[in-house]
Length: 354
Image: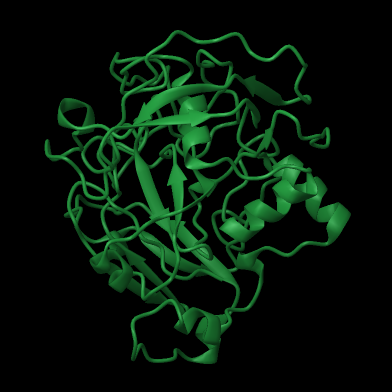
């Protein structure tokens, strides 16, 4: 089931899409600026992490930023950005890459789990996330599905996501582009069309959990100080991350080699040895988004979760979500073809090996 998806970008906006019975509510991507930790990277804990995970040392860094560090595509500070504040994190381990289709398939095969997008939409549950008085759609519009990106044929204003997002019956993690698509050749690509509950269920099965927002950003920074990106301040290039090249949302040239998702680990590691913290797919975190009264009204009172990292749909004309401090927030039932996750665990935990 897809509920309200809320995205923040270069300007404040609100979108509701009722298509095949789902409603997309979006407003521009919340981009939170941030400064990096003030000290050099510490050596990782001596205990070897489970295969596929990276040990992150404890430390204190500054979350939240202002001024030049905090500028979005409009040249102005973006909404919902916290002021700089120190945050201390204990040592932990985090997945080196985003969770892949192959890994998620093993989880589904072992448990019989069905994702949110594979289940019929529960109108009563959805109604609680919508503004009061939203009419109930026809039953035919409440069938399983998810939101799929469809490029436009001509340039369009970037103030209405309904121009490129489509509710698609039959879209889910096995069919990321719709019912006729497959993941047969995408085993090592990040799993998408997963809700917060889906991501949490997988991590729990692995004896892990979703990272907190602070853990995610701390790992993404890789020990760098005061930098905009996980690699530093140098401009983004096709060699650094999987993002949109070309005119958004008309045509992605794929200068980085990928017009959609890329296999995990296709781009360089950061200072901690973690990859894909910029672009490819947005990633769920454990943290709840603390909404202003206006945000809460847009979300219909639904509790939202924070998503980090940007995706292959990010372009500087619309979304600089690939900045290390950028944020998005969405209701937990939201599923999109550019959203996935990775897992984390405390250093003293005993996560399962894949």
